[in-house]
Length: 302
Image (cartoon, rainbow, N blue to C red; front, side, top):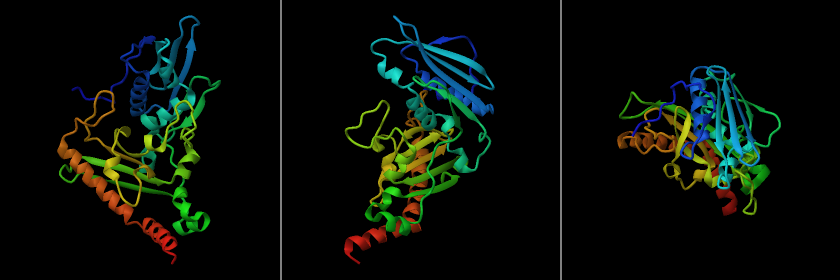
């Protein structure tokens, strides 16, 4: 299988009609990666629907390196879910989670794209929103004892702690990795993620539950590829408490950047070993041990 390439400059032709086997979102994702690799500082995505009897989705993409590209897709009665992906808040969520523009690089001290901006205008928005480069993370919280004093048994819902690790795979020392692990309570997630569902009755276009998004993402070129929550199972911390990204160029991904299954098993095993080490460090951290002690003290009546 041909491996996905993220650094090939896109061709700049006229409007491109997209058939049912092509995904405009993936095209935008690849172009953003190419533009940032080429050190573009300004990117714009503008979505609209034209036509009356025959509606057409038009997505205009432009960056400061390669110029403009226009994608069009004919919509029909079965295209409603496709069209919903381009509602502004839904499209913004996709860009900030699953494209290079939402990279975790800033948390790793890499600032080469720090000044990059995206002007995003999804469907049903009047003016473009100016968005700064980098994935959105919440601020770290107070110490467990302060949170516990304020929230008692619900204190973990308000907890946020960052762990950053870099290194090399044990049996493949030529392969490096970079990891950003945040532990976030559900109340913290709701403070910055407008698409999270807060109740079973809630229904909004593009909204999702914590269980459908959070956990551990394996990444290549800082783009999340596949979620591996089974690798971070622990009796003391729920996998969905993690907002975590493990980026490794040793991963082999499919053309659509949705699976790491082509990666040699030996490399995957080494990645699991490094993730296990990170988990051990987190579980043994002072904050986690203090939380366990505080909750145990309340439950046991000490």
